[in-house]
Length: 122
Image (cartoon, rainbow, N blue to C red; front, side, top):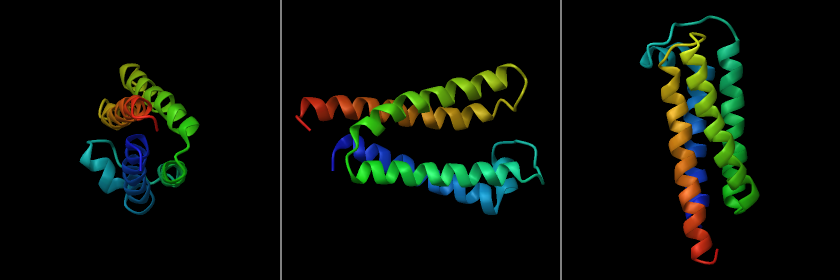
């Protein structure tokens, strides 16, 4: 398995955990980040989406889908930018930035792993 595929699998596992938590125990997860609890269904919808994105990342990693891995670098950076903007504009708790940081760190890992894979001829 390439380094970039490993980074995607680890990120997929993160998405599986976050997605599952948002579906089944959303307010527990929100409370860990000092985000107000909610009884609305939107948080569970986000959980389903996160979990399913994890499936995409897992399958892409399994098949060494470089185009997906490269695209995921850009999309995960955009998540960080968007979450930070939401917090700075007062639309969301500043704690949302921590979720964006996870995406940014994952994007950086995948980016550098892709570079290493290319140098190794993968």
